[in-house]
Image (cartoon, rainbow, N blue to C red; front, side, top):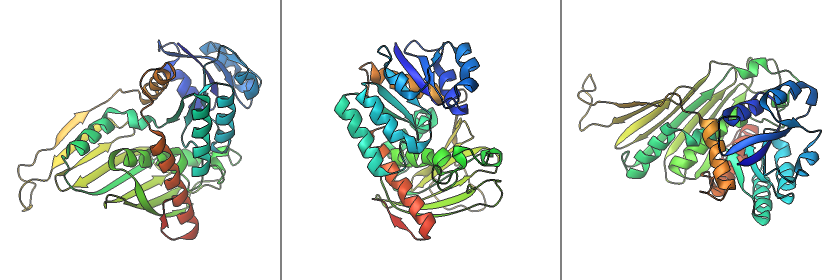
Amino acid sequence: MVNAAIVGLGWWGKVLVDSVQGKSDNITFTHGATRTKSKAQEYADDKGFALVDDYDDLLAIDDLDAVVLATPHSKHREQIEAAAAAGKHVFCEKPLTLTKADAEAAFAACEKAGVVLATGFNRRFHPSVHRAKELVDAGALKELMHVEGTMCAPNGMFLAADAWRADRTETPVGGLTPMGVHVIDIYINLFGRIEEAYCQSFRRAVPNDTDDTSSMLFMFENGMSGYMANMLATAPSFRVQAYGLGGSFEIRKPDLSSFEFVPNGDGPITGSTGKIEAQSEDFSGFDMVNAELEAFAAACSGGEAYPVPKDDVVHGIAVLEAVVESAETGKPVKVA
């Protein structure tokens, strides 16, 4: 059993705890730390873990194996390096950092200390994404042409002006860090490295200093093109659809539960789609957050490596940097 501490008990920190506490035979939360201890004490008592005063106190606990970070992005590198120095495994919410250099430094610290560093890309664990990867790897789409995706939520409309998620230095390009990086990670997982990014991002409706409408164009090293949109003022949605010469697949719904593959057929469309039949699958009820923490626990215990590779994470941060630079300059940016 991996004894873990949750660091940051906002809404997402509680989602992480709830996904495994009392449900897992492999990981449990024994401690926690958060900015305002009094606000989380009742929750910690209910979930059966102890709250300590600060992060340094956590790292000094001998029988603590790991920390789970649900903290502002700008704090991740120093928190990861401190945990590594204390010999603790680290699960860190995405994005791991806001710069490629910081991501590389965080991984280097954990590699030197011999501890696991896992990034919270929970969508990568979903059966719909696994199904898409099976099709791509098997060549069912044949030559890949284009992918497009959207991930949206109304959360920007309800952010307090002083919330860290409303701070442009923490969350540049609006929905990019809370949502868009998930889609970018799926793109990298399925289609490989991204070569160039172009972004436009602006605020129309949210009552704080956050962009609510962002759209991005990508060129991949394999020659295909891509598109993504994030909105922080609209109904929850998720969609990734990819097109190739052999067919297309689509993952839909906020929980990613709807999957469909449509073969291209063997002739032109003449007013209808003819006999082409979509192959649909439903993956309702899958707990992505539980799956990622169970995988983290397995890696900490000497089992299979955490299935989001370092190279993918670091490249994703380089893409994030390129998107942010493009939004600021209004020009396409090569990914470092």
